[in-house]
Amino acid sequence: MSPDLDEVALTIPDLGGRPEVDIDYTVVERAAAIGCNIEEISSLVGCTRRTIHNRVKTDERLAEALHRGKDGGAVTLRRKQWHNAMAGSDTMLIWLGKQLLKQRDYKHLDQEVTLRALPAAPYNPAQLTEEQRRVMEDVLLLGSQTIEGDPVEDSEE
Image (cartoon, rainbow, N blue to C red; front, side):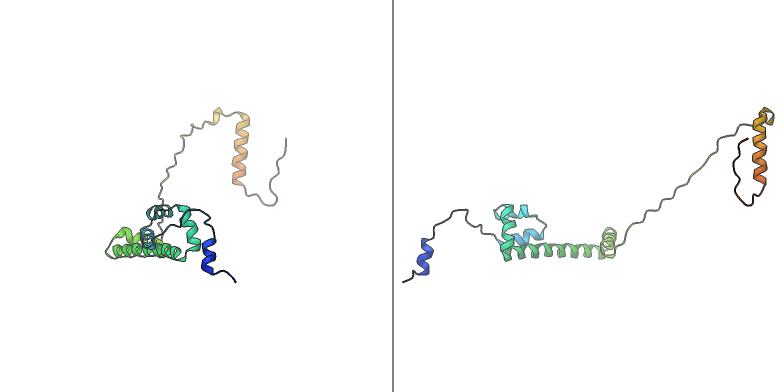
């Protein structure tokens, strides 16, 4: 004769551990809707962050309450932003344009630059050495000629 299932359940020893925390899903959903993080939600329902993280993996109702709360909060916030924008809030219109329409600010830099040349020393050909005069004449002569063909090669004298 095999033992009854109820009798077997009574003979299994209690393995210890903490009792499972009873989580109020309504509190979780409402807290998530106003943007509370897991740490804040766990404080509200009387458990640790780890408990919430672990239970979300196995408790479908808890996971759904978190998602529904976060999504509902986002929709409520978007509705309020939209309402403010339609009521004429320039700030909200600009922000929504950036978020939804990928609009952005363009920064135009308009800069004026003034260049000043240092005053040149007066040119006095009488103060030039013979070498300086020859180089000056060569430079002036080269500047007035059109060079055709191969580039001019430097030659040592």
